Amino acid sequence: MPETMTGPVADLGATLMHEHVFGLSPEILWNWPDIPEGWDLETRAREAAAKLDALKAEGIDSIVDLTVVGLGRYTPAVRRVAELTSVNIVAATGLYTYDALPPYFGNRGPGSLFGGRDRLAEFFVRDITTGIGRTGVKAGMLKCASDHLGMTPGCERVFRAVAEAHLETGVPITTHSAQPGGLEQQRLLASLGVDLSRVVIGHAGDSTDLAYLEELLAAGSYLGMDRFGIETISPFEDRVAVVAALCERGHADRLVLSHDSYCFNDRFDADVVRRRHPNYHLLHVSRDVLPALRERGVTEEQIHQMLVGNPRRIL
Image (cartoon, rainbow, N blue to C red):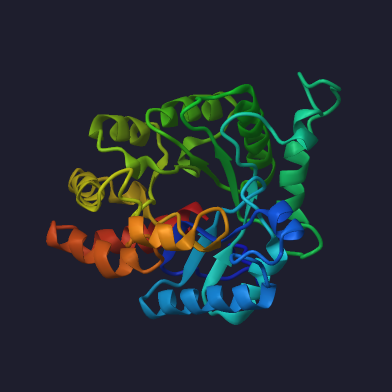
C-alpha cells in the first residue's frame, strides 16, 4: 500500500502527482523571524489544511508532496497538516539542485575535496524504509532534478543515488526537467538499470513539442503535465491543447496532472505571484483544466485514468 504522512492507505483516489505543502528557507526564518512571511507552524499548518480541504471538496483525495532537501523540506510541519486534513499526503525523498550539491554532500563522496563514500543513497533509503528524521513518516517517491545547465556532475550524483535507492526499495522516481533534458535523464536512469516505466518525467507539460513528448513516452515513462497555472512558461491554452492531443493519440495511460503549487512558500512574494499567476493554485485543475479538456474531447475515462489509474499504478 502507498505510504502517506499518516501511514499506508489502501487507495489514494484522485491524486495530484506534483505539489508542495511548504517551501521554506530555514536560515532566513531562523535569523529574521519577524519578517511578514514569517513562520508559525500551527498557523501555517491550519492555513495549508484549509487549502487542502477545499481541494478535497473539488474531488481530489491525495497529493504527492515533492518537497525534498534543497526546497526546505520540514516533515514535522507537513505531518501536522496531514493531521488536520482528510487529504492524503505522500512524502518524497531526494535532493533538488540544478548544479552543485550542498556542501554537506559536495565535500564528501567520489570526486569531492575530501573523498570518502557517497551517503546520498543511504539517506534516501533510510527515508523510505525507516522514516524521515524522527517523524516515522516514510517517503513514497524519489525525486531528482536537472534543468537548463543539463546533467552537471552534482545532478548526476543525485540521479545515480536516486537510481540506487529505487533499485533497493522499488519506490518510483519523479524528475524535474526542462526540454529536451528529459531524454538525457531517461538515458542515464536506463543505463543504471532503472525500468523507465517507474519514472515520471516532471514538467514535460511545459513543452508543446509533441515529437519530443512522444519520444519520452516511447521509452516507457510517464509524463508530468504538472505546471498548470504557471502561464509565463506555457499558457493555459497550450497546456490544455497538448494534453488533449496526447489523449487523442492514445497516451492518457501515461499522463499525470498537477500544478507544482505551494500552500505556503517564503521564496516568492505571495502578492506578486497572485498578480502574475492568478491560476497558480490547487483548485485550477479541478475548476478550469478538466472542463477545458472535456470541451476538447477528452473523455471521463481518460480523465479518471490520469487522476486515479496512473497514480495508482505509479505509487
